[in-house]
Length: 76
Image (tube, rainbow, N blue to C red; front, side):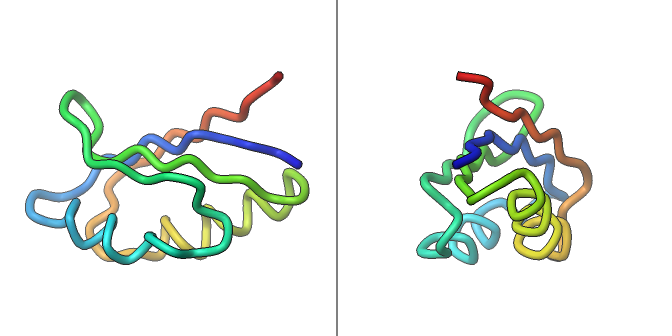
């Protein structure tokens, strides 16, 4: 299994929608609105790096209001 944290910068007013949309999705282990330079942090887990990449692309990048993401893959 591969685990990663995705730091998500959202357009104003969209962070709550992102959290509501991602809650309960299979790959999402946790999701939280946060303060600081990013608006949402999601913890994802997938079978391999390819599945993780697809989950980020399909579940996060495709959402209206996403400006930028950084994916931090866990190494231990």
